Image (cartoon, rainbow, N blue to C red; front, side, top):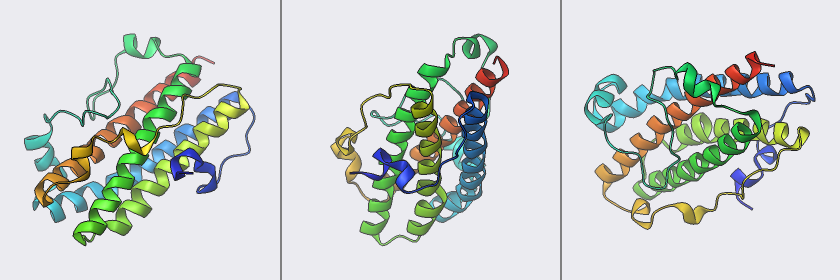
Length: 202
């Protein structure tokens, strides 16, 4: 079974059973994950494109997400509107954020495979700074869903990847990795904002 289908087998989960505590643990772990990817994004940009993240984002930020990626209704670094936040419901948030993070986990697994194929230098960064932390947030959401008896979407399969996104030259691969990192950042920001909003209404 794939790692993202049994995330708590790869990352420890909290022992909370209180709804507010469960949500807070998801928020806390998502913030840790955001800190970790923030530490990597400049290193990635400099090694890959020879520029810092801000400059890469300025020139490539408008590129559309990968076709099989989750639709994240949020601009990077910009807060959601109150109208958007007020639409959020906990059960749906648990289900959708879990599925979307599973998609990220599949994408990161492909990033690692790409790096192995090209004998790149970011393999361990991808494993320790992205993959491990994606699994840790997945584990906390899975724990909360199980505790609160919220059914999850069907597990995401590796076959979700568009075949063309498994190949390509170095430039194509690195552009794809940029898009994955960018949209993972967007998703983490979205998750933190949404769970904080839901918690504030409990």
